[in-house]
Image 1: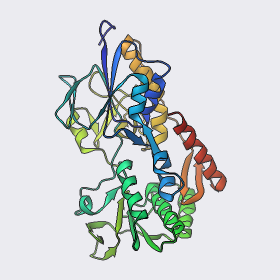
Image 2: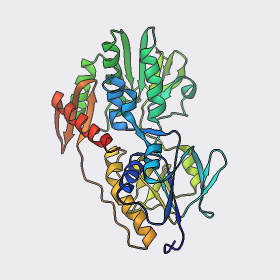
Image 3: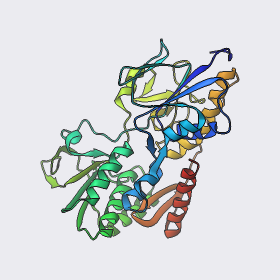
Image 4: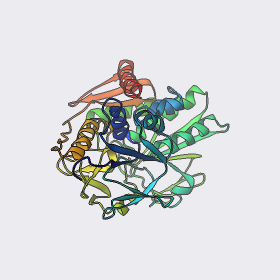
Length: 366
């Protein structure tokens, strides 16, 4: 697309952190002669950084919400409460679940990831994935407030699974509810983390009374528990999937070049189709791959914002250069947290206060 002779159509698919920050930036610097449309399933999008705090009971549910629809109203963008299912690059349209075909000159994908485990029989019927966050938050809120015995299984022993297990333990203790909480992994828990993090977080799991079950692939999820390899059955009445991140299957219908299901982007966050970008967890940085973490999505926002402006005016794009390391903050159930950067670890109430400050500062923008 060249020039500004007529209004250009910019379509944002998803209300992830990067797109939210771009909408926020539009308050000060709108796109000249361009109509912006945002597609998101639901008026709000949850902020992932505060999810463990919500699960633990430190924040109310509404504290997690970025009001995407309100942001759109403030900047004059059109909001569509819907879900994208495909893209027709040759026709330059994004296809929605209801059959609508939205034309675009520029399009950007920021749809996050899922923790669904379609390969495990019974998971879809009897468990809830930790991501998308909105669905999980609603299910957990109902469960912790309901009467009856509490027995929880978290499938996936990475940092996300450990955070959720500790947060659940804290929340149920605060309600004087006896609960059995188990963290199950197909190999060793926290295997992808540093020795410093493994040692510290394992100690906190033990302190929170979490039972760790390792080298135990889950073969089936049943209405009242899971079956692990070898046939052993473990009872539970709330089962969460937090075993890593997987891309949304429908992304394969975009026609874009993918890496293990994620949209491949270059240094300028551009995908393989002309005028298309991808950011956040749904994107794969070809030149500088990075783990899935919200800090990268936040740092991508000004680059995407600049590059959309540049595409409209014909200016050269800016490269996104991810940081080599970042401050990793892990909630430990109560108002304590573990932090690590450059191999140095530290934990305690002050670390939680730092995390709380960072999270609230992010949310206060909206």
